[in-house]
Image (cartoon, rainbow, N blue to C red; front, top):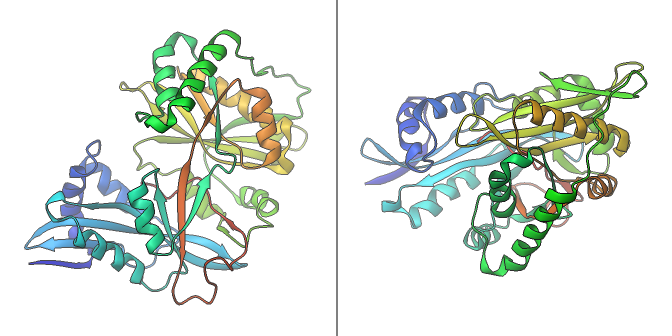
Length: 370
């Protein structure tokens, strides 16, 4: 008989052996580290919150959905959102049991928002729409920009930029042809990004190892028009940005004013390796620039390219979170491509604020470690 129950601490070892069946590039050790980051080390976690749910048959785990609490600002008040993670059910019991375990995730208490990270999958989209999830497509401009760091590794650049880790659909053939043209043009005529540094530069960038209150303060003006947004307190930022339990490493670049060393902006990149341990590409995951200053953007972008060259990287990929940044990237980068990344949000049935009446929701591109 198959039953569903909350995940218990005694299940973690068995769960770490089960999940590599659904996520083949992972190991038992990887999951055990990730479980620590999801719950004991998570600043939003408390013992009253469920860690997730499992499908059990006898002594065997046949399905799982993780429940990752995240701190959100909900009309000025601090609330807990629940991010679903690593939803996987063994193929032998998929169907009704997949929905049953997802229903358990949605029935939990103590949360105001339910978060789901999805892809361009109509089946998943249809399921989520029936559960009253709102779809948010990121970035808003639906554009990514790229810079070729190493032209000697064009096979990797072509594969990464053209395919974006998946084969294109037939309906995307025109976009695929455009990407080929952009790549060829960039290979021949890519504009250099100014990487010069002098004592007169108003800004200087460097690698960051932790976030303090200055990072949170920087976000205050950026999120002043957001009614619902991820909490950017230092504990949450450090948890998101510096998790060691990931398939891909993250790195944070910070930019300070030269005159007084105050923080002016930062970027967070995910480092995607090649099949070897070498760095392949750098993908922007989060960005915060004071007043969208193009000089700060130039300093950070130049430093990111320099970092990529020092670490034998091949490609830098960025996106814009506002019109000013979009303008800077469009004028700076030769390469661009159309992209759609999906985030979904659902309000708790017990909350007075209903879907469509909540004001402005600012969904982050970055998601809890997974």
